[in-house]
Structure formats: C-alpha cells, structure tokens
Length: 205
Image (cartoon, rainbow, N blue to C red; front, side):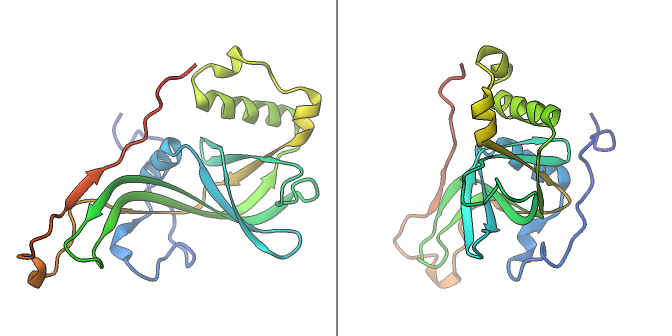
C-alpha cells in the first residue's frame, strides 16, 4: 500500500497546545506514526481534572479504532465517570526504545516515541457502541479473544465506563540515535552507547 493509499497518511494540524516549548526538532504531526505508537503501546496515561477540581493522571488500557481512541475505566473511579458525559483530557502513550548512555551526566537520555492527545472525552452510553468498544478492547489483548472468553455481565457492564477520544489534536515526539557528546568529553575514559529496550509478550491465549 502506498502512502497515498494509506487511510492514515497525512498530518494532524499543529495547534498551540501541540507546539512544544523546547526540542521542537523532535516533534512531528504524522498521523501514521502517531497511530503506530498508540497501537503498539500497551497502556496510556490520561490526565484530567476531577469533579473536586484536583488534577489527576491515571494509567489505563486503550484501543484505537480508526480516528478514535477508546479507554476503559470504572464508573466509581476518581474521574467521576458515573456523573458526567464529556470533559477535557490529555492522553499520552510512550514507547522506550533504548537507554542512551553518555560520557556526561547531562547527555544521558532515552530513545523513545511518545504521543500526546488533547481532546474532550465522551462517555459512551449507547448499548451497541459500548458492546463494540468493549469487544475491541478485549480483542486487542489477542486476536479473537472476545470469542474465547465470557462477555461482561449486566453488573460488570454497569461497573465499566468506556470513553471515546477523537484523535484530532495530536503530536508525536521522538528521539533516536547515539548519545550526544560535548567535544571536550570525547576523550574521557568512560563508556557510552545505547542499550536497546523491547517489550515482549511471552504468549497470547
């Protein structure tokens, strides 16, 4: 499939919120690259302001379907999902590809790919949509897993909150390559380099 045929080619529109204050050379708005990170990351972190006015960040399981990110939560969680239908969130998903060792403390770093999403999260209430999203979340664990496990009971369904987050205001920041060294540090007697990091799923049921 060529880039022109790819349904996720093109870029997100850059906004004030997706424009970084530093290291701007590491940020892009490529839709396909951002979706690749969201699909590979095993979980994401969602930031929001709770009903009590306090900021919070929670890790949660997610799945992307087309141009929408879906999150799983609890109706009794600190998001207050049992009592509101739509609220602003920021979501991030990060994959660490390597630990970068430099000859100086300052230039130690990581090779990574990180996506940040800004949007209004919508609480899914339609029964058919909830079933479809719940199934997609389970199948993300392993293809066809929803057919090899019991569906949620009415009680379990009532305890589960599902959120839809439109993927419209999105950026991806990434670093790759060897460590940066100051010219005066090149001859220091210290090792440097990159240690690769991978996430391995030992088996899928």
